[in-house]
Structures are given as structure tokens and as C-alpha cells.
Image (cartoon, rainbow, N blue to C red; front, side, top):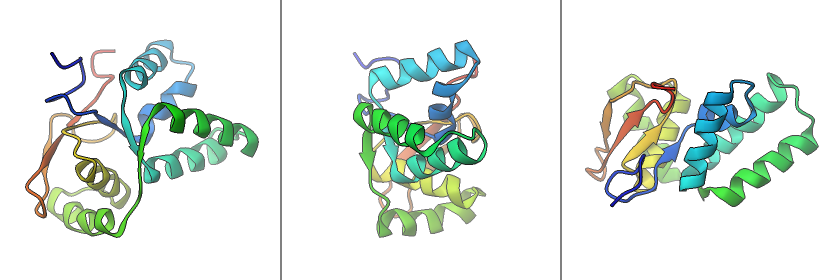
Length: 147
């Protein structure tokens, strides 16, 4: 039986906002984010890049702390590279689904990783996005909707 949050046994992909809740004072969201990571998730280099940017710019974390937290995340998550194929997929997805460029890169990375579920707080909960290149699809879910 697949664990909660998994569809068809595939590991889910997580968006940057899910990882940022690991640092949140909101205990229920921090706990939910931790539970997702504990079950095994996939992130893309784009997610790590966005995390570093927000940690520095909005949370004013020192570089050493950003590096330490990202190291822990990389140890707990499968990390997918940002490739030309992901870039090309994002170019097709952004206009087709009305996604921002950064969201399209994250969705493209999830599709490239073979994930069928993408956890994000700020994308369209329940939307199924299909790849015009591979025919695979991923469903967007807000992991905090019932938190």
C-alpha cells in the first residue's frame, strides 16, 4: 500500500514553500513539512536555489546557516538537476497552464523526475498538469489545506 502523499508509489515532489515551513513558527505547518520530508520526497535544484534566496533575502539568515540547512535538506531529499530538458518543458508549461516561470520550472522538474504528485501551497490545488513531451502528468496538492 502506498503511504499517504504518494500516488502509485512514486515519491512526491515538494515546492520551495513547503521546505520554508521547516523554519516556520507555525508549528502545525512545520510539523506537516517535516512529516512530508520523513516519508521521502524529491526536490529540484530550482527549489534549493529559491530556498537559498528566500532564506537570505526575507529571513536574513547568515550564509553559513543557509548552507547548513540546505545540506540537511539535500541529505533527506532526492535532488533532481536543473537541465535543458526541464527548461524546455517549462517553456511549454508556463503559457499552457498560466504558470509563472519559476512555478513552471518546478512543475517541469517534477515531471522530469517521474513524480505524480507535487506539494505546493501556492499553486492551484487539484490541478493536473500533463507533459506535452512525455504524456506523463503530475497533480498539484496543497499539503496544508487541512492543517
